[in-house]
Image (cartoon, rainbow, N blue to C red; front, top):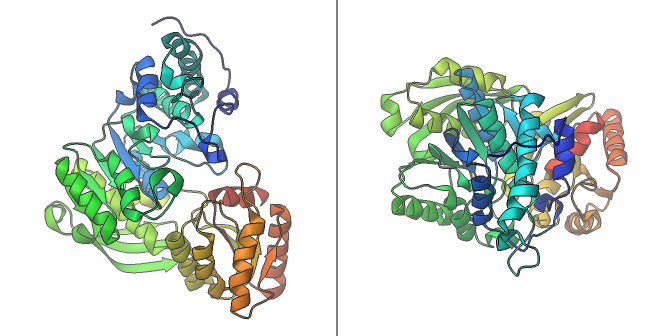
Length: 459
């Protein structure tokens, strides 16, 4: 391989360079959405996706929590873990980490240099129609394709023992699906990204099922019947051993409190023979987080049956994950959560009301492609004041349209003053916290990870 030019002196320069490429998170759509493109990029870089074994995670909700929990438990067990996830909340380096920390600049910079060499030297020399915008099915490399390759390069340069990899969108055609994992984990499936993944639960499950690899085990969260049927069929076709959470484990003695969640996890079937019940604590409130932890543990027990219980306990007790039912202010209490689907909003709202009561204050925004109507139906009965705002400048939002949906439903319930539109996020946050102090109420910010990031950075 030729000597690689030194383009970058900091990770900030790398991410600024990456920002010029097409980014689906900003609402742009490339003409090409193909895993073959990622395979070409990986081959040009010497296939860094093969540098370490991996655990691959997909799903509509909870996959970020599962990714961080899995990484934290492996780190507690002594492994050097390369973690990949999105979106970020505070710092873009959150997406490409070693365990719970950022890679050193001495890793980021050489990886960035090789990445740019691939994108600007090796790829143009290849003259692939897949990356030619003038070709009918071609497009320039995308932000997520290059970011994913950057992660693999960081992993290889740092000599990590294992990769924990979260999909970006879908599964079958997701850039991360070039890995051949030890085990795949799929969380709960909901209607999401219907423009790309399909407009039925079965169609979306089919896309997520694309990460199931021949002969490699699958750990599956509880699912609706139409999704479960797809996963069972795909696992059978690919001779993948399926462990379905409701049949393999159960959660007892569940205690959700403001500081987190305590529970006992016990196993059935094959896992029962290798592991007794485990008492666990996680620092995030919510019954769903206990289920996410259970999926992580089942996957780890499947491929690392000798992993110590103390590593599981320590990893779960100490992991941190921004914007997952995170208390960012105590007076008044302000909780931010990235819930952005009807079911996740329902779970978030249920947890919030169980801890803070009903008739509190909500700051809400969501992306234009989310089901705002269904989320409004869940949220309106639980909050006395609702402020609709934007998602910030990173991603497009339609606060006026969302306000109209919430206002119409609220009006039908005779609550004409319940919903207020404040498009500036800072003003919305200031108003909500003023109400919280004067009325002795708590505040929940939900509907979007981008909103959660904006609110979190205001405090």
